[in-house]
Image 1 (cartoon, helix red, strand yellow):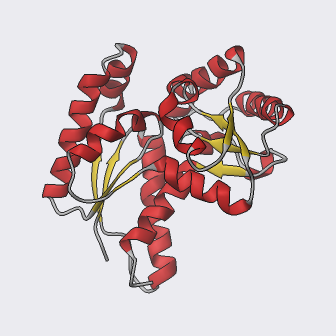
Image 2: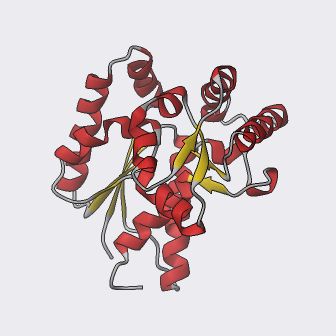
Length: 232
């Protein structure tokens, strides 16, 4: 089994889910007492959030790239970044590594394409919904990407940072997300990507009438598949 290096803690509410999913999947595939072979770097998210708010993406890139290299030096055979938003910095992280870096956008795109859909809604932080770094990854796979309007984008962003990263899951926010999903469907979305790993804490497949693609789960499962390649 290959060792998975995880850059996590952004926030820990979702990265602990990554660990749980990876461990459960390895046990499911290999049985017995098997679990995932992990090396985890979990940040104080307040530090990362401050870099985001300051628009200091260069500083954030230096932080994540440096720690990605340290994960490799510690024995990681592949590295994943347990957050959607910070994949804005994927090129810097990849440049710091000689081992594979598994991009969350590829895991999500593969899952959407496998269902036969060609138009998908994207929910996430404003950085993810409004930036090109994530959308272009999906578009390269042949997908049309639909994002919410300005007011809805702000509401999604505010729920993520004001509630979900703090471990707060509110029914009123779930209802708001359901309404926003409805908007995306009316704009042609055939499914919806939970493009912030914390959204999976709030929005469940049974909450929407179209396929929901949970980015954290899909990413963690892709990492396990890479780690077990040739074994299971």
